[in-house]
Image (cartoon, rainbow, N blue to C red; front, side, top):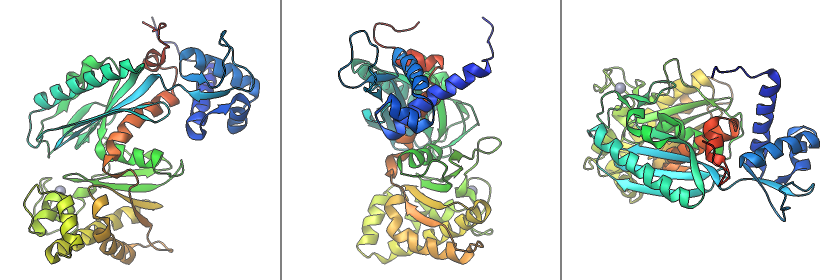
Amino acid sequence: MAATVPTPQQQIRRRNLSRVLHALSDGGPASRAAIAARIGLTRAAVSTLAEELLRAGLLVELGPGRPDGVGRPGTALALDEAGACGLGAEIGVDGLAVRAVDLRGRTRAHTTLPGAHRASAPDAVLTRLARLLEETTGRLAAQGLRPAGVAVAVPGMVARGSTVVVRAPNLGWPVTDLAEHLGRLRAPLAVDNEANYGALAELRLGGRPPGDDFVHVSAQTGIGAAVVLDGALLRGARGFAGELGHVPVHPEGPPCACGGRGCLEQYAGEEALLRAAGSAPGSGTGRLAARAAAGDTAARAALAAAGAALGIALAGAVNLLDPRTVVLGGALAGLGPWLLPPLERELAARTAAPGGPPEVVVSAAGPGGPLLGAAHSVVRAVLDDPLAPAHLRAAAPAGRVRP
Ligand SMILES: [Zn+2]
């Protein structure tokens, strides 16, 4: 069948269906009249849209419903906690993690699986991930949930709009298309850099205003940043925006894996930081934080140098983009007490704008941000386009599963 272009009326209907869902997601359960007031449509229009969403299995009627399924005027509507859900996964250097959230944003499944993925073979790791996702899908089915999509966060660069990891130095992978390994899941697959999903978690769950502007810096082994402008991720022409770890801090500094010299990662990356502090490689930033808290001079000096390097690199981003806030996430969040003072000092000294540098805060989502952001990105996709076939399939009420 040839694809048909939606008419303007159909486009408006789709947009309004999405607005009803977003109103309930943002403001919680509400009557038809209250939704109408929230989104500026008539109550009659909202009733018609709500009937369609109830039939699709995306909404439920709260309170005493009538057996014929026709909603009563005063009854509250809510997003359906059965049916469609978002399934997120994270591939880290130390393991895999999977998390599912329902349309109301509640976690319904969460599993972590340790593994040594540094310099690993993609086949073995992705086979384990596919099995983990299948097991999770089975457990979700027992709760009446079906994934409307799968979103995978990776510590590497992903070609824009694709499922292809083109560079993942810490995993040591060649160019790898995740769709070739995860295609059996029968749900749309999205793949993105972990920093981007971390920023989405911050945007959706960190209490930020919808159109906020901020730079979210996170570290696993490398250092990545995600730039959010007017509430949307800045991706760059090829999808590779945000490589803050390779911004030069000292142009004649030590060589970096990227081919450059003196990159931020050589001063504030986890490996560099542990080396500078005299810690064993792989001993983790948690132990480094404990040493710093106990007053260890070498640990504090390494963190002070890393914070200053972060401030110098971020000054470039701040002068270029003028964000409202800089957010430290991932492993950096736990090092905030020692990184922030030198970071803020460098930023203040180098910010051109009157009024000084933006506020620097520690992420509310914490180290789990990327996984949470991945799962929530699927839920957002359902709310944005409830009539997409994969979303309708996942949402279809039990016994009425569409082919
Ligand atoms: Zn570099």
